[in-house]
Amino acid sequence: MTEQHETIQSVTDGIYNNLVTSMIHSIVSKETAREKLLRSRYGSYKQYHYDPNSQLDIHGNPKQQDSSQYFYCENCGREVSGNRFAAHLQRCLTRGSRR
Image (cartoon, rainbow, N blue to C red):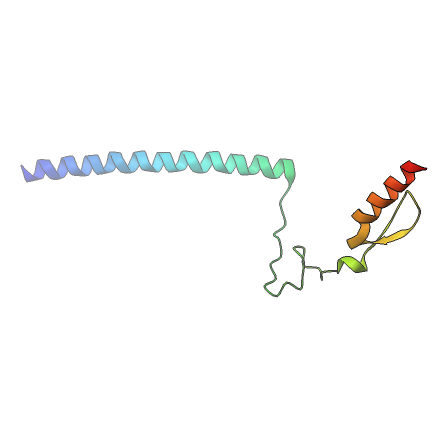
């Protein structure tokens, strides 16, 4: 009886292992095909840079202060600081519509 029990156990283990292995192979092949499709559409992606000191941006470049960036206002022709650009546009556009 024990030999028959061991044989049944080994057969069931083999069937179970084959099922699990085929499921894993199926999942891996589907995900590999999906990954290849995504890479062919969008190319490979570049990892973002992580700086624990917050001195660099996500691309690894030194951070710039908003006040050091200036933008050109198309409406009035002035250069405006980046941290004041939204407020300037609101004033500039409402002032221009009153004239």
